[in-house]
Length: 472
Image (cartoon, rainbow, N blue to C red; front, side, top):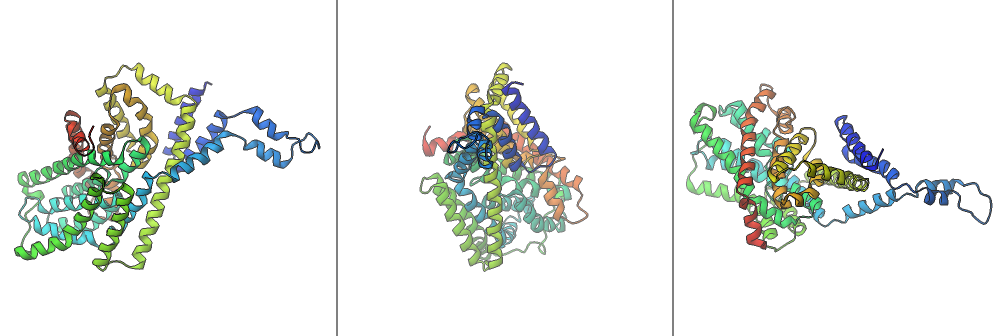
């Protein structure tokens, strides 16, 4: 068996183990070390350690020399070096800080106030409660970046309110599931930080490039909600005065000032400081974490228990991301050393694809991978396989990354593996059926595909802000 064939065997075994449910990070590390031991095996180097002479006393190896000989393989050096590289990566330092900001905001009851305020403010808009839920999801998803947290909290908060307001069950479920995934795309997105670390693309350019596509997707969602409420009023009835009180102008402004603007200002301050070069992403993330704590204190929601939970969840999620990076770096280094990357490159080149065909193939693969895998695993493990092929087709990695971010919305929205649907089902009333949630998700899935088509046909939507802020 040739080295490239060994590399493909390594990849196939990994995919099988993933489908069997093995922990992905540790599976990557184990396969990387196992196949790396074969790839970097040097008999002369190991035998020198086995039979090292000590004071001319005997030729048989001691336990110490056996141990040294077995581990005298460069794959262990690779593992240590890659671990150090990940842990010292300045881009990844922003991950725990943004996560901490999101978990603090989640536990401070800020979202409850925000949804109620937006619901009152938008009461005259068709489908007002759905629009309020989408805007709340967008802001909260931007702050936390954790799909499960957004869908779960909004499912507990907004879904019962919409069902009491006689909203169609599928329609209301689709709004929450789709809105909960927006944090993958809209800056300051954790996913874009991870993509930047994997691809070498500037995170500030990625944030600038993702802003207009993210707003475009939110706009398409809102257009669909308002349009359906107009065409099918029974799916989103207008709220009664008992359901949504008619506040005066000054009371409404006061609610907006205390509920909507603090969180919106925090997000704009964090994102603006990055885009205008006033702070690095890590510094801006630190500002966001501090701002989240101050908001929690201002709302009298900061307790030691909530602080401890936020710290624990931050550490757990950060550790998962970092170990995924370590495993991916080791796995991909061995895979490339054995010739697997070159074999894939030659295979794709032999297909004589056009740039559009390559993009469709890559996005289709990522779409399918989104069924069994989380976005973090796709970005860290599989996207780097496509990155070396981009120059061959003249595709900008910034543009490719934004398309991937849009595509990964579908990984949470595509039945039968739509994780956002399962998150929502887990906390929804018993009468809400899983098939109803799937039915409600499908129109929003179509909006994602439409937004991808818009991005491809009008790529300046992606490149405009990076060029304005940072030049070509």
